Image (cartoon, rainbow, N blue to C red; front, top):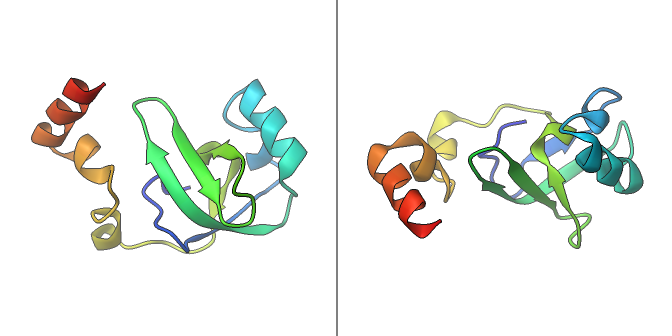
Length: 101
């Protein structure tokens, strides 16, 4: 899925995606998600090796972005409005990210 997905973006869980992202993430996905269901993004948090996904339908659990596929494409212009986009797509943003972490 698009790691810069904004609130309201729709994703789906497939047979393949539910078991992606590593064993512990697949376990969480298999407990809380259903293959074939559509979910709505509440937020994503992009880190250097993992993107955490919060869903509007399941607010108490974070999931791996690997557990989902996009239903529709989000525009690059919309991607650039995501709060973490600047951290990973500009030198200045990445330097600031490193200082904070």
